[in-house]
Amino acid sequence: MMYWYWKKKGIRPSVFYQIPYGELTIIRAFYELEVEEENEKIKALSGMPCPVLFW
Image (cartoon, helix red, strand yellow):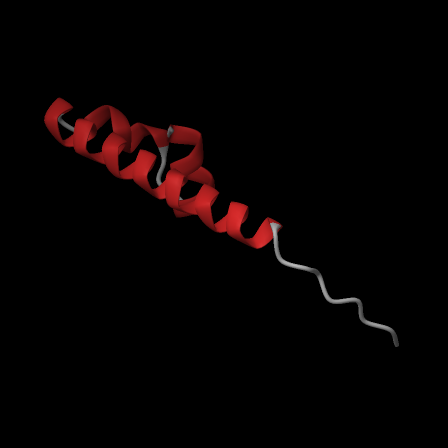
């Protein structure tokens, strides 16, 4: 989870060590929801035909 936040949001891992446990629990739930939403988008797009462009 920390790697994802570092890569996608630019939040350093040291910030996570300062977050209270209760808040971290909520952040983890938000993280799981966001990953699930991204996976649904990818799944929806995978069934669409890709256009072929010729130059």
